[in-house]
Image 1: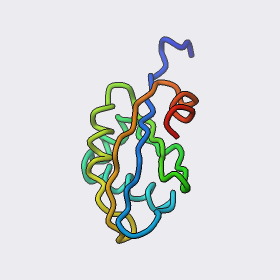
Image 2 (image 1 turned 90 degrees about the vertical axis):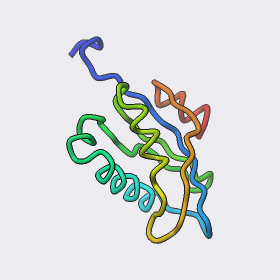
Image 3 (image 1 turned 30 degrees about the horizontal axis):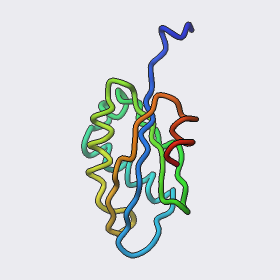
Image 4 (image 1 turned 135 degrees about the horizontal axis):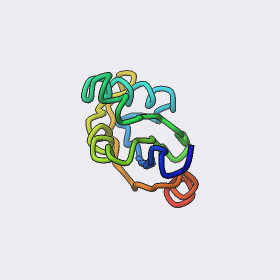
Length: 108
């Protein structure tokens, strides 16, 4: 498929602020998916192309991938995540990039 016909993706880098301890990548991934399904629904998650790409447990930063037309929904979704595995937390968007390598190099 030619590059002009492919879906364009954006990578949203986020930072986790947990109340009591560090959060694992698996816990954050499940919390993002759960919030995505509650907020966007199954059809919305499918249209947005939401994927949890990466999470650095030492820096407590991670990356999600969304379609370029759904960046605002992805940002809002991260803001709505309030807990993971009964641990209170908050997510803050650090930046958005069109290239995963640049997102990891600049923010993660």
